[in-house]
Amino acid sequence: MAFIVKKNIHGKEYYYLNKSVREGKRVRTKTIAYLGKNKNEAEKKAKELAKRSTAEEQTTGRKTGKPPQKIVNSNNNMEKISALKPKEISIEDMTTFCKRKGFVYNSGEIYGGLAGFWDFGPLGVEFKNNIKNEWWKFHVRQRNDVAGIDGSIITNPKAWEASGHVSSFSDVAVVCKKCGYKTKLDKSELGKAKCEKCRGEYASKGNFNLMFTTNVGPIQEDSIKSYLRPETAQLIFTNFKFVHDNARLKLPFGIAQIGKAFRNEIAPRDFLFRCREFEQMEIEYFVDPKEKCPYAIGNSEILVLSAEMQEQNKEPIKMKIKEAYEKNIIKTDWHAYWLEQEFLWFTSLGANPDKFRIRQHKADEKSHYALDTWDLEYEFPFGWKELQGMANRTNFDLKQHEKFSKTSMEIVEEKNGKAEKILPHVVCEPSQGVERAFLVFMFDAYYFDEKRQNIVLKLNPKLSPIKAAVFPIVKKPEYEDLSEKILVDLKKEFNVLSDNSGSIGRRYARNDEAGTPFCITIDDESPKNKDVTIRDRDTTKQIRVKIADLKETLRKLIGKEISFEKAGKPVETRVKE
Ligand code: GAP
Image (cartoon, rainbow, N blue to C red; front, side):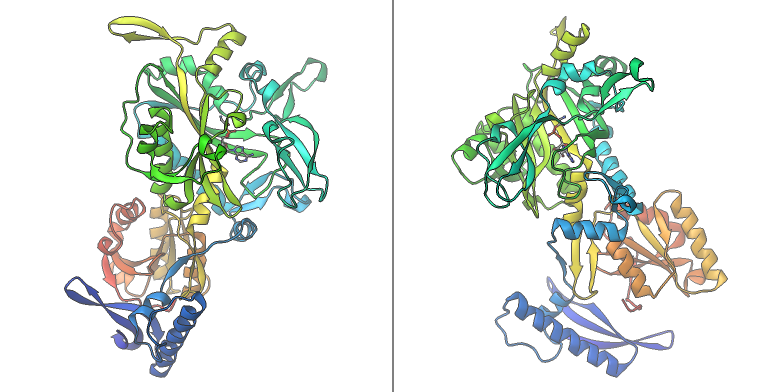
């Protein structure tokens, strides 16, 4: 039951729409909306809210089974007024949003841009760094068996001959004979694939190597031709023995790297999905192929699509990754383990688990180095696409580097009391692009709030570019100085900004759209009581917290170590949103 209440705060009247909610055996009062400072205005607003929610009920076709309510007295309606809804948007809309908010710009836009190249703006660079930091924490710091490196972008070109990229890293460029649409095809698709726009036939324009070439050395006759790396993986292989020795690793172990990769893609498209310059987050995980995976595979459920199912035109089946391994759909325990780890990394940071599936590469689809590959795929607005490739590369790369460099890549391990030489296998290579992860988190965070009438970017606080916005609402030196002091202190640890322009509602809306999880208000009571208000982006609930505890509270809130309600003293919303 929803009802209007009047509150007297410091001699002023404020009107709210409250409702009673049953929690177990108790009935609690919850504030749904702020209605203003005047009774007539409040009644009008309450009626408008009821009307809006009824209209919404009709347009969404959702039926309550009850006749539309005349006044604000339905719990059901009230829930909808304040509901935060995920909003499906196209990749074009996402591109526009990212540009408007300063996440991503066309590279060199003032000159018309350059296809496949993107620049990251103030919010984008923070967000991207947070994704990379969370990846590094999960895959390197929190494990005992993975060490990191940072290899160079250009290396001795022999590395790329050894890896097979010079001879085999190519795609076929095709153009549709009917509509002129240009795209790339895998060699295996040539002669089979139809135009994705008009189903016309493709004509081949030839086979193109995807590596960018460059000359090392400014004097042409002395320079050597080399390549911008098309994957970070090879630097891991070439440094494999050094890292094994320096980090004192024992099999099984992984070497991780985050860094730029370049591919002269025939058809860069879908915003950040297929770029010519991008960043990869990769692990080469080395094992003795005779040994089993010592780590448990959990109970994560996901849609599974094997090569065999695709050949038989079957639909993916939802099952536990563990079950897929037990039924021999996934051939190795290591593959199953890493597939689950990667899925968990995404979902632990707020990605929607229902939009993920794992798909095995068909025989004619595998890269030149792969024995078996499973992709972690995500349902983008333009279809199911590869988010992450996980190939079993065997000992192909180490063998090739042994052959081309004439250097042994074997390591010595003690087995049953005896020293044994081993050339380890990369049983699984979790490899993903930062830009694709960027898109996943953005699409899954994009919500629209009917009540607030603005976008709320519900990013996991760990990924949010700005952790908190500080609002001084009283324009007097005493308040502004306090606000500055708080800001300086918080900035030592978090990316925090001060927002002091426009109405408070405007400031909240701007920060909701930027994904800022917490807004801190320094109000008329702050200097006296030495406390501030923190407002939660997703619920708009507010708590009062002592300034002395602010940093610690923020740290706990970002890490989700404490619920918002328990992080401070709940307060009534006094400020119009
Ligand atoms: N070392 C293995 C490797 O590079 P890949 O499947 O070619 O394998 C790994 O690439 C991941 O890198 C992909 O799953 C994707 O996330 C990302 N990636 C590849 N090409 C990309 C591109 N043109 N633009 C953005 N990301 C790309």
